[in-house]
Image (cartoon, rainbow, N blue to C red; front, side):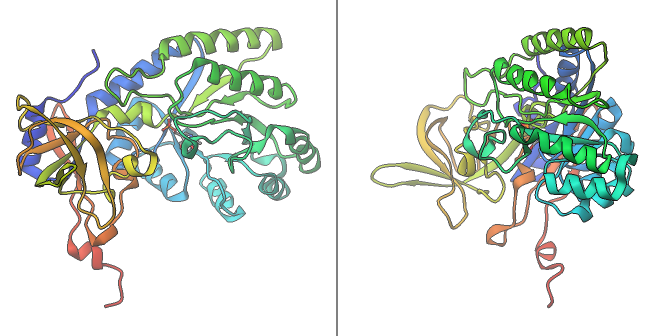
Length: 402
Ligand SMILES: Cc1ncc(COP(=O)(O)O)c(C=O)c1O
């Protein structure tokens, strides 16, 4: 059984650290990593945690201790990773729409570099020739993912170099001597179908035959986790078996060994996270009952940005009669967390718990309406530990010319 945190512990955390509050379960993070590693244990596999999902350095340290790698989308994420103790060889820098200066700096930090643009590949090759092998991100023209905003491998996506431009990649290799050590794809987030991963793998394995120095296939992240009641996530065991068979057969046919890299974010941390808010007001109008909470899309934007569903539970009144509410925030926008949601009767002061809030929760938070960002705590065998304090008015003013 996957570990979860009890309501008693969640309530104790809100007593100690107040709301709104992000709570993360270390045991669950470790469990997710172990499950994923086991599913691919027939392969030479490296799991790079996509830290854009949740970049608190205390969480990064857990992955570092587990022996994971880390996938970083910005140079600041790379700096976090280095400070968390990751070896540069375990870091991959996968930016997009950044200029050559960022790649030059990444090279000076000796991390793995993933290039997703032909012009940058050429500039990089002209600068460094064959001295710094890189991974190249391919856009496979596969439309997949939970919704269009998180679908990154379709033909109109800004990400990656089109698979139709493979000859141009090869021309740059010939002209500049740049070494392509790996090919990468990430078709999107919240992908459940094993066939989507298999289609991507087939395309990339075929393409890899054209690169003589290549020994890495990076299949990105995007493993779906269940958000709604009775929903299922990707079947990670089936995925492991299917992809492993394909890769093992490829290795035998090509007489070479392949390292397989993955970069999951959500799968590793989403279900380990809980977002706790307090009911501030109740309001009945002629058509709706609202419950207002002491938070808004400044703290958890997924419902408003992606129409994402998060299970919400009234953990202060778990046996209360069921009533239907719109759960709304305190931001001066229509920041509705949930429409027509059945909850155990909510009273002002009750704690509402949003499940599955570990990934892209705190990480996408902002200071909109001059509200501070919440605290984050980590629950592990040592108890409940503060890993980021709540911001203050002074934090909001810091840096402004007063
Ligand atoms: C290149 C890349 N790798 C990995 C991820 C992680 O995706 P997920 O959190 O869905 O696993 C993302 C997400 O945006 C991404 O863009």
